[in-house]
Length: 453
Figure 1 (cartoon, rainbow, N blue to C red):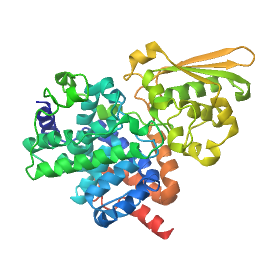
Figure 2: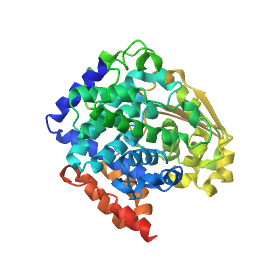
Figure 3: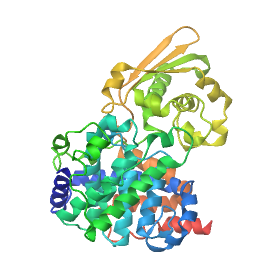
Figure 4: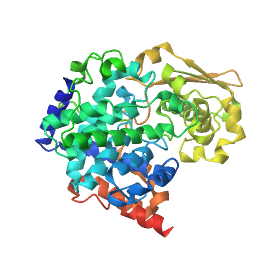
């Protein structure tokens, strides 16, 4: 049974220190998570969730992204939501999955609640990433047809991380994973129109994983074949994955070292097209006013998820290839400012959007999800056609963001909320996580800044 294999992996992982390389990549993931958490924490739906869950706030030992005290379970729920709200959180490409939002939210809430060290926290994050990314990759494209992997697969990442924080033995660790499997949820239809549901999927995954692990710690059992049984997750939500292949590299090949970190503040399915358009602009010194038409060929799920031709809200615009490519061509980037009201109503952007044609490229579609590529062609008014195949995305393992890039992303997203000094203090502590003995006051600068405001 695959949950037992995962539990044995966690036992072995716990028995020795993380390597320097894995530790470094785990810290990168945590830094990127905080960069997503902080701006998301001060927006809807999180500010609305704080009202709804007020009974669990201003007490407890965990903290929200705003620095506000919370019980561990509610911290996992709200922080998981916050980290997925502004669409800048990490990706494990082969699993079509954002592992950080649910996994790190649950791990941090549990670590703060139990006053665990930064070293223990990093080990928990690593366990959550290694287990959940393999489940997601095994479920594959068939799962992604209807399900939002961050909501479903993320439940396992959260549960594994919390089980590691609680030091569950092999038997109870397996039951934590078995229990959370039946909580896994999140429908794609929830974000194919304007709604707040998509980030809630990540929050629910963090909450459900936290709950399953805490219950398993007290002896609550689950069906140990719930993933690979004949009526289990693999057949109910996919096409009967090969679970033996899924676990074959456990403990040898660490997926956390191959995470994609976002370079644009929108749906990751749009990134190759954005990067390709920007490459053509730079290579040919294109005058955007001389573009007659833009053709984008890419993989089918990109069009299904992010093919909205007339986005009305920021949430819809983040899932509009037409909007983000036009924005990139006119403004040179797709950052948080791209989704402010003045940008959303920009007439030049809206006009250029009408000239964008989307299509499925069969070769690029066949390579999904292992490759995220786009072919971009600018048809100029003088008759020239400028074409570029963008084979990957900036931020993917083949073109990774450097540590310096991550620092810049963190400062850009966190400083407006926490202030420059608060952001720098938090960043320094995160790069030294393995030596931190108390994680409870990580967000104290945010609390001080927001309380002063």
